[in-house]
Each structure stands twice: as structure tokens, then as C-alpha cells.
Length: 338
Ligand code: PHE
Image (cartoon, rainbow, N blue to C red):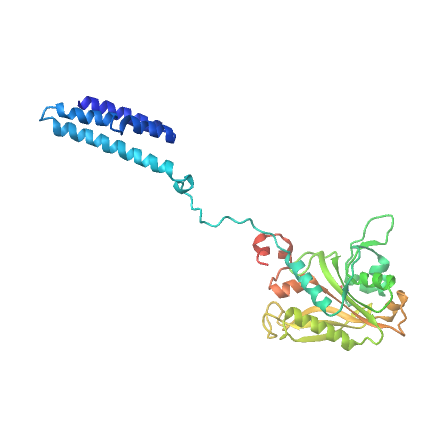
């Protein structure tokens, strides 16, 4: 009898391991676990076992029955519950998100600059990066041998036309605007500019500027100051202080440079402002009468102001990035902060 039980165990074990569907599980049940199944048949024969062997045989048989029933119940519950609940998968976990791109910090600054000027009634004008000497220098009152040309080291284009260059500032767009339209003007002109400069923490050979130009009758320096201060307070906060320092540009007279109180030390002096308490933000001035004449605008009737500043510089002042190269190294650890 013990041998039979052991043979049946081997059979049951091998059948269990072969079960691969609810149908084969049902066949297993019909073969072993019902009234007419193998286990009950053996139970019935327990009667004929000699009295002294009964406990051992009965125990062995009982163990096999419990084993078969448990295995059956386990497999049945696996087939009955949906797979998703038995897999080790937490369906409530949030999915992994794809990283989303965002607008580059320099372009975010540009968008904001333009929206501030649009609120102040400025339109937006653009022109090409490739310029000629006339629009980049000559019409802006840089004489051919004018030493101020050295202020901006220029990339010249090797071409049949020897006067082509990459614009060194967006002031060339002023000329194109004044030549193609009649005053009054009130425009800002964003664009990429190029200078043959050594790349360092403070300067790149390719960067962005926004130029501003306002030409009308009776435009005064006071209006220029008001415009720049209103703009800068919107960008840097209303607590900032400003100063206008006399400066020189061939295309404006008088000319000035504008400084803002250092955002880091609040004017006390630190590494960023080189212990002066001030950071330069833009160049500006009243449009030189010669420039107006070059664009066929009568300086006796019209006057105006112009200003220009670097967008990377504004971005650095607002974000606290103190190395301009970080903006273009495409390190996501930097860029994803904005
Ligand atoms: N074009 C000048 C520069 O690049 C800035 C400027 C613009 C100054 C307009 C005065 C008026 O440095």
C-alpha cells in the first residue's frame, strides 16, 4: 500500500508540474480529487490494511491528499485572479515621464524683453546677420579710418564683394529701418551679433543684442532715460537703482552707458560687480544728426534716441549665472533649471 501511495505521489507531482491551463487543472481535479478519483479509491482500501500498519499508511495517504488539494487550490486561484494582480507589478506607481524640453534661458529673456517693450508701444523689426560695411559702420558715422571701428573686432566675409561682414551690433538694423520707412519709429530690434573676440567667462564671439530706436518730433534725452529705467525696473525689480555715465558711440550724441545697482550685493561691492556696486546694462544716446541725414531724415525736424544691450548679459544678471559659456555648453543640468 505504501508503494502505491508513493507511485501515486510521483504521478500527481509530475501531472501538477505539467498543468498549463485551466482545462488541464480541471482534468487533474477529475482524476484525483473527486469521489471517484484516485485518492478516495486508496482511502477506501485503508479498511483492508492490517491494524498495526494503519496509522503509518493513513498518515502518508493523508499527507498526499492535503498536498494535492493545496496545490490544486493554489493553481486554481492563480487562474481565477487576473494576471495583472499576480504579477509583481505596482500598477498604481506613476509612469516614468519623458523629459520635456523648454525654451532656452536666453530666448526666455528675449521673449520677456520684447513683451515689456511691446507694452510700452514698441514694434519689433529684424534684418539679416550678414551685413555690409555701410550699414554696420559707415551709415552709423564710423568713418573708414575711424578708430572706433576697433571697438568691435569684426569677422569679414571672404567674397567677391569685399565689404561683407557679420554684423557686430544690431545698430545696423536701425539704418535699415530708417532707410525703408518714414518716421515716427518706435521699434526694438533683436538679433544675433558676432565679434572676433577671445571666448572667456564674460564674452563670446557670437551673442545676441536688442537694439531700440525711437525717432519722432521733440524726442528728448529725458524720454530715453524714462524708457530705459521703466524697462529695467520691469526686468530687474522696482528696487533697483540706476546711473547714466557719459560715454562715446559714433552714432549717438550725447552718449551714455547705463549701470544698475548690483543685484548680488545691493551696491555694497562684490566679486560680480568687481567691488564697484554697479553692473553695466546698456549703451544709449540721442541719434547723431549725421546718422539721420544718412537715412534721409531731416535732423531739423526729427530727433530720437537709440539704445542697445546684450541679451546674454541680461540673462546672466537675472539668473546669477556668472560664466557666459554655461549658456551655450548645452549641459542639461544647467538648462533644466530654467
Ligand atoms: N551698438 C552699441 C554696442 O554694440 C550699443 C548701442 C546701441 C549704443 C544704440 C548706443 C545706441 O555696443
